[in-house]
Length: 289
Image (cartoon, rainbow, N blue to C red; front, side):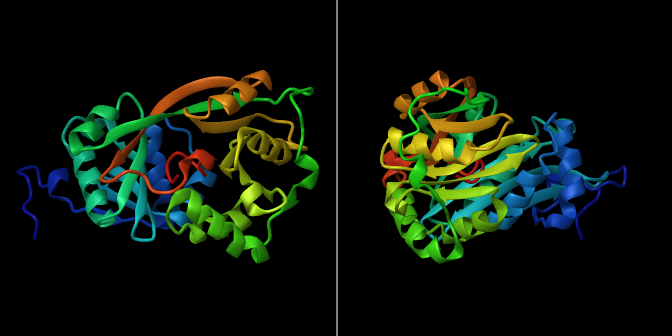
């Protein structure tokens, strides 16, 4: 049995990391609210559908910290949604959760996006920055640059998953068929151009905003056409998380009425990221890639 402190409460440092389930969502929402995160229930449903959530229970009640690991076969994994309660900050819990997630990832290349607050921790653990991820948000202008290619867009069905998964494997260098299958039922829209190689993307709702992602395309023109299609009929704000290397699509986003809302660092642990990353424009979320 774990030794107890003199107060009779087990120190958080002695509490093992545990796998969480959707039954833990109330405690997760309470923890993230402690750090002023909005509830984002739809995002958490996606996290549980695509990834593995781990947490450290707080002996005083609730959760002391959480992290999400999303595996893509044995080759690639993403880490996200790492948060520690303010009352347990600066005590090494974030590092313990990260090391646990890295052990679970095995020999896979691991990547994440880091705020300026979290980046020093990830650098100490051996992550290195390779790009930026910039959020663009707002309403697309009524009259914007060309809609070329939108007419050829069509909805993705279950029968298209094999073809999309094959192209996606080339883009990511890993098998993400599970995430793509989740998007068919989770997303509000999941569209592709003439073929998956021409471009495909999904859009889903997050507290009144339509989030665009994942989005893969051979060039910025095709990516913009997919975005236009995914936003068609939507009258609220949209959000894009664009890799910094895609300055051409960033210029299109700004010209189309969106505004840059903030940037994070794309960081990798281990070998270089696999796949043809030049064709990846937006992740499903920055938490799961």
